[in-house]
View 1: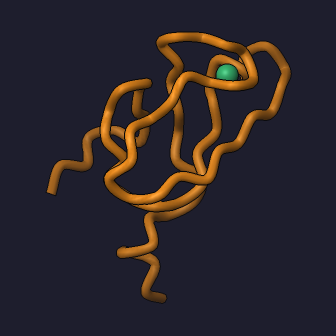
View 2: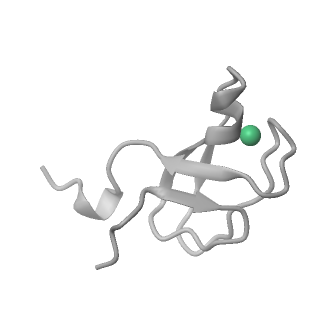
Length: 67
Ligand SMILES: [Zn+2]
């Protein structure tokens, strides 16, 4: 499976349902966390209003969190 990166950008498809932090917000000292479902599209970030936001998954993907 493709697993080269844990980061995703606005417009990409959500591969794993879960929580995602906006890295743009993080770099500005804010914490914006979105809970997204599988097959959704990553939205614009409501925290920093960046149209090309970068998100990082929080924790492990549900499908791999079997232990
Ligand atoms: Zn943001």
